[in-house]
Amino acid sequence: MVLPYRHEPLTDFTLPDNRRAMTEALGTVRRAMGESYPMRIGGQSVFSDDVIVSTNPGRPDQVVGRVSKAGAAHVDAALAAGWEAFDAFRRQAGTVRARYLYRAAAIMRRRRFELAAWEVYEAGKNWAEADADVAEAIDFLEYYGRQMEELDRPVPLTPLEGEDDTAFYVPLGVGAIIPPWNFPLAILTGMTAGAVVAGNPVVLKPASPTPVIAEQFLRIMEEAGIPDGVINLIPGDGGVIGDYLVSHPRTRFVSFTGSREIGLRINALAAQAGTGQRWIKRVVAEMGGKDAIIVDETADLDDAAQGIVVSAFGFQGQKCSACSRAILVDAVYDKVVDRVVALTEKLRVGQADDPDTDIGPVIDERAFDKIMGYVEWGKAHARLLCGGRRVGDEGYFIAPTVFGDVDPASKLGQEEIFGPVLSVIRARDFDHALEIANGTEYGLTGAVYTRRRDRIEQARAEFEVGNLYINRKCTGAVVGAHPFGGFNLSGTDSKTGSPDYLRLFLQMKAVAERL
Ligand code: NAP
Image 1 (cartoon, rainbow, N blue to C red):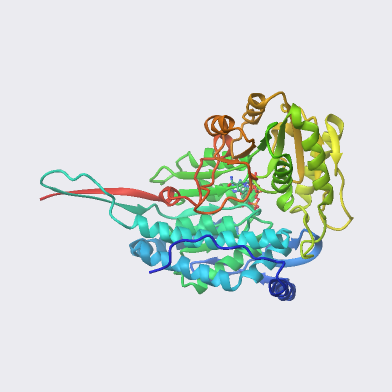
Image 2 (cartoon, helix red, strand yellow):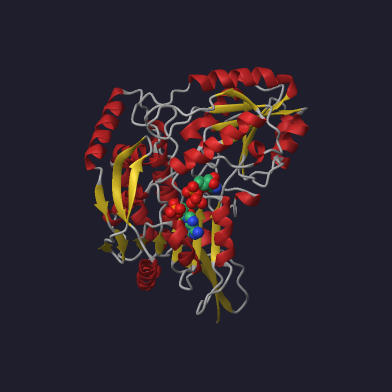
């Protein structure tokens, strides 16, 4: 029996012991960098000549690790290994499978600083963001373990006279897990653990910028005793093996988190039944956002400005939940803008391993070029209020950037930039602000700062997002407290960290026995 689920507390880095522990962990990880890592198929280590060279986005010459890359034959082998493991694994009770997760959570807790240090170097997260990602991974393990124990109980039914009527959940089969790089441990852990605890072996294809963190996760699951073949790790280029994995007739479901473009592609490909395929593939696709924070004339403006800046620039704006639009009613527009710019200019840009850094590098050169493309476009079509430039000449650092008077229908007002770029939009009044907020194809997160109860209720009813926050930032969803997932082209609204999530990887079997 385990304690009830409780959200993992974040590390307080103002305490000297914690600072010391993190500094030591950074040293340990620096010394471990550059190693070569295999794939894992059916519990076997498999090396290939073709490797992903994972580097530190803040110092691109620093190699974090070299990870073997999968090709089509490895995908075939990984799916075969998963199906081989399925028969025994699906027969394990949910309560038994939950224990792999509890044990993995305990190992993560013990290795907390080291895992955070890998994130600092491979993903460019600052200390606090890296620590929060590890805490969230632990939360997913603890939460989904307990959820599976709940789902292991018989489904309540209304039995008929003369029958023994029962229903219970069974797993689907072998699925593909395709996570993004931006929460390289938390999202990867949540997606994998959710499918696995429900009884499904998986083929895990991590995002190419963060494969070493995926390796750390796998080692932890192996140490926790997960049977061979249940988690098959095949790092590789999504553009090369992704379609093959998704379209494969032996892939039973696809759990994807990433961009709108790839999510829609996966949804379309998975809908076509391949030769010999015996099921409709289930697709869980969580995608991007163009998230907005609305501020009205009654709001606490300091609080609102703080919430906007934290939401816009945490992890360099590379969160699906990041605030990329601040929609301010005309009456307070100038006051809020002044505060937002003042707070943004105070943010310190630097290497992620420096404890004083607020803004680290963006993930890679491709992201850097894409974001700077939007910045240059913004300089020509909106009013640059701060930032708008590269910082330093080593690494992919971009000064946090704020554009004012952005046209809500323009590129800056509509497209996900996924970097430290905030568009400020002027609204006539609250109704207009809500109309602008709802005026994109996305619907992931949003926030409203107001003191008016009627407007809070209006936002509850009319702000079309999966995650709405009132008088607080729009990032930082907590497992178990804030079921997370978006509406519209932000995804299939899978609601991670909620009682609904594991059902996505299960099907209900009903058995009626005549007495
Ligand atoms: P991405 O480019 O779409 O990649 C996501 C994953 O898909 C990666 O593992 C990628 O592999 C893989 N992939 C690429 N092409 C593929 C294909 N043809 N078939 C199958 N898989 C393929 O997204 P990202 O840059 O990693 O992540 C950023 C995006 O994720 C943003 O849009 C963000 O909003 C979204 N996101 C959403 C949520 C949410 O909960 N809604 C959470 C986090 C992030 P490679 O790395 O090898 O290309």
